[in-house]
View 1 (tube, rainbow over the protein chains, first blue to last red):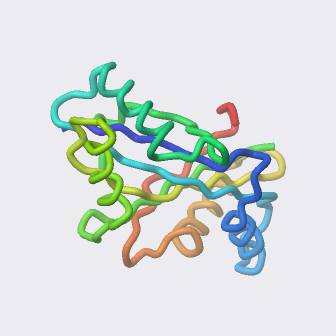
View 2 (cartoon, chains in turn green, yellow):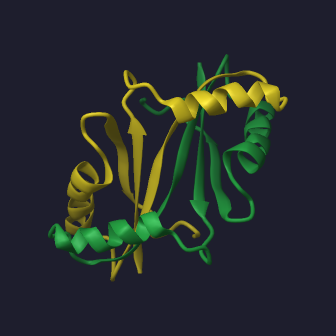
Length: 86
Length: 86
């Protein structure tokens, strides 16, 4: 079984309240040195068989329509992660 | 400015309703061949200066306490992403 990983992040100009909340909590919990935090999404799509270029192209289209909102989010990467440990 | 990327996913044995919803929507939108989907989180932490081993260790501790819930989530990776394009 192959696996495709899709990373989606809020666009830089879009306010990210979750990221801001994390950034505010870090120093309160003793984690210093972090300037800002952005929170996005990570999808793992399992496919039957291998991740062919066609599967990857299919995943890219899904990433840009279903997995992200192109008005406020960027698809950062769509990659074959079959070799990586789960 | 350096950047650390933290990936967090629901543990395999934990129900992931968001992932299930995506998996159900994919074939309805014409994206076939995907067997299952899991949805997790991706954090980008910006740091002052370089990502030293100390910064990475600090980020790892934050990932395991603040950024994830160790009961239901796994920290999949904590890595230096300073070289990657935003």
